[in-house]
Amino acid sequence: MQHICPACQYSLPKTNNYKEEVPHIYQKLAGSIRFNYMLAYLHFQKKGIVQHILHELKYNHKEDIGLMMGRWYGHDLLLGGFSNEFDLIIPVPLHPSKQRKRGYNQSEAFAKGLSEVLKTEVYIGLKRVAANETQTKKSRAERLDNVNAIFEAVDPIKLKEKRVLLVDDVITTGATLLACGNVLIEAGVKELSFGVLAATR
Image (tube, rainbow, N blue to C red):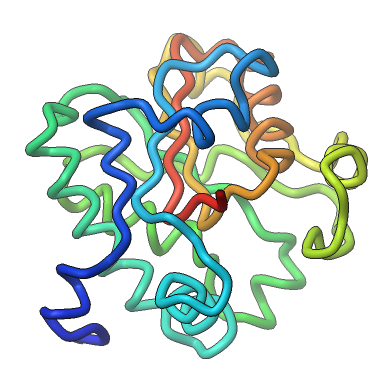
């Protein structure tokens, strides 16, 4: 299903940070955790096209948008030499109650699109063991506290010595990715990288 016209697709505010580091994106997690790549498809701006895309994906039952965006970004990464950089793609999990209400996990939809192109398994390797309050209006410190100890590895043996791409829809402060990433490192992953549909400035 085509949700975005070709002209709009070509005008998307791509970060292209798989080619060249974008400091304000890299610095969201630099120094907080050991990681290999920090990959973000689009720049997020309030009231811009990317906010509209994310709103449709998360709140208007447009799971197909996540798949489509994942495929598009997957092609960029494929051309950028990322065809064999990851063993597993792991989406940030929703709490089961929220996923039941929404019907799908938007990060998993993005992960599936990436997986189709990169030929890399999507593995539901993390579970959310507690529901947390929305992160939207919290400071970085509050966000970190809000996601502390709410994620667990499903099967640490499956993760051991794997090169993992941890995927989320948007990175703001990096608190959620940091919390999930720490769990994956504790489980013994060989390399940890991050991939997001959009990154705030």
